[in-house]
Length: 472
Image 1 (spheres, one colour):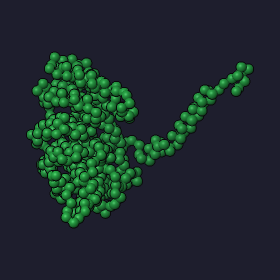
Image 2 (cartoon, helix red, strand yellow):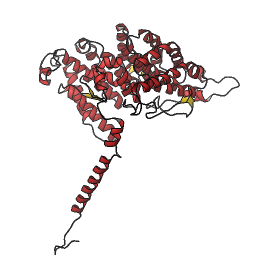
Image 3 (cartoon, helix red, strand yellow):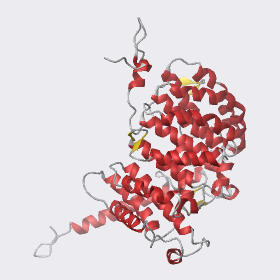
Image 4 (cartoon, one colour):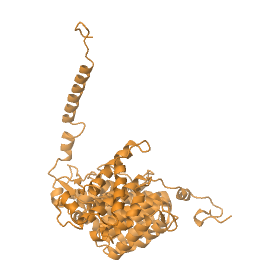
């Protein structure tokens, strides 16, 4: 009988620790860094300050009683206190559960409290202390590895562009996480997402992006490094590929020699997968590739769908025409799929998602996503922008609107005029509670009127007369 792996052996005269037992447990498919809470405190603050305890709610609205600058400054002070304690609270902690709790607090501080130029300055000041501690945790349990990858993503969002030193520091460690076939699928997927987002936001080294694109194409195949590729890793690889592809030219994506047509057979197989996440990732890649193909012949952004269709950029007459037709047929089936093998919620989500993809693939229509701010809305009209927004949203989770409102590098990426969008011309929190909440007087009046209408309709349905014209 062969020896057990070193990580599974017990020390002489000792018992296996609880942390070691946890390390052997497989992570669930929906595992997240904001999962269960142990209820303790780390860094001397409560792990889970929810709501608008920081003076800003998750939609980016400030408390009416507080000044915006004072709220931001107070949050930056808390962020500074947490970063100064990372080395002791995480690096010097022996209990794995407490280290994981520390990562949860650190992740929330990065996404909720590291706002504006001040957040970048604080992060840069403590980068040399925090990043080595995070990288060291990539050697620990699966849940801790996952948490460390998510924290690296959040740091990349805070630091923004022109931070090649940070990318070069984390790239080798994240590469080991992704390449190690013994790591759990959730960990490898989180490592690849962190690696690609750090490359997209922080790196200016184009050759590194090309190498990472090649790796994503390899990892999205059915077999990778001599083993069957986990579905979660394949979906993450396609999402990462589409994110990195937004940084290269349309001709490099959709020409006959481009990357897009090369992976079309792979995307076709992914659309037949049992995994809804993998099917959605593949559909998004197809939509972006088709959009890039259309753009090869259209320089006018205001061109109509008919003009876009019949100019250069069509698949007609190419060696990929039959393949594209088959992909269209499969995506049309997914956009109208029915049956009892999926829940109603899953079917509704899949239909809505693939109808958007089909509007681009069949009708050559541009997508539209709107992000609402206090003073206006930000409209995104290309799949490249939508994919970039989705990557940032997936990383920041509950802190997405806060980062979109204050992160200057994100403003540059999406072309947002935050002076207009965050002007505060809309309703205040107090006005929203007065006029829009369920407990407002206007809402109560509407409820009374609706109840009265329902009663009238019910009386009409149940009103009968006998043969003599008398009520029954």
